[in-house]
Image (cartoon, rainbow, N blue to C red):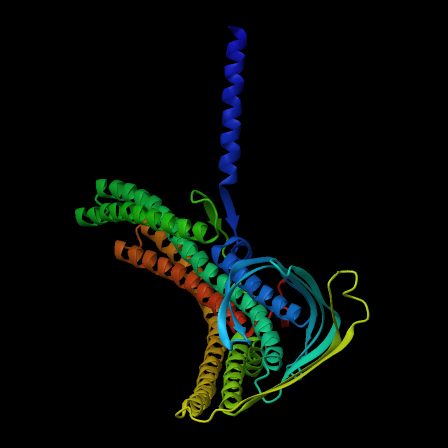
Length: 491
């Protein structure tokens, strides 16, 4: 029985220890920089940004691989036919159906290399075929091409390889910049949730303090009312303030829970995580020049690369439709060896030279203006793309200029809001002391309380506006103005 009690005691102690550890694990203290780091590491938006980048990375690797030599096996390992097929009888000068039974096998191994400059393809291949005919004249035959070297080229056609060489590296560079931009957008969003919680946390602390103060002031008011120092109406006002303070505290608790849940969800934390925030300071002496910000935006912002990519793609379409509107000519040539034999041993003996040269032409005669219409449409689309890019760049420049202006103004506003918060706190404490000794009325105390709360809100709002302007400026320019260097991430 004693051992059973000891085991039960140890089990209870272990459960309490695990509960304490779990409780510690669900409490976290965050400052702004750690919040941003968690968002860039664990949030769903950061995962999405990285997966978008990885998709573009694999697309670029596919483009690079297509520029390398390829080795391909084309094969028909086995094909068996037993059917009636149409044949021409030269003696009777008629077509007749004859029964046919055959076995066929074929393989071709080819190495190819594309040339970006010309748009042609150089190839080296070898092939082997076998056919076996059954019936009255049963026979077997092998056909081989030991080696063949050739080249295929569109003489006047559209060169896809040349345009891909221009566009694909630009698309990959844009994907890298977009990853950084998306992570900075994540930081901007995370800072918004951070300051939502910071505001709710500050209001909750003020509500707790107001409730304690209103309770204490009401008790003091009761004592003063007993000695007729204040009237019944003033005592009722103090009692009303106590009730309002309790209601305000309950509302503040609800807003605090909502803001905490929203931040935890965005950071991909457990929904029951208790988060305590530390308000950030602001970087001292961060001066941003408008011209520098515009220069960094033009160098780094992925929107500029997107515009350049769209213009190149429109030019690519225009080039393709222009060439398709003309006649097309193709050229192919190959030289190698060829042989046939009834046995595999003889099929590679004394091969004969095989030379193939072909020139193809496609000349549109009557198409009722279809090719011309496609060309004119592509030309107009290029003009639209260029104008849209110019308009978008003007709006982006305006956004950069306004954000730099907002950032500079917010630095001044933070200093003013910080000074106002300190003054409001001192004024509230002095008014409270004067009310206790009977030198201030309830209206002055209420006004002082409201001013203190408003100063606290203004300070947090100023911090929020400052940091969100800062993160937005980083997103627009992809430049770290604290460290004076471009923003880098590990790719």
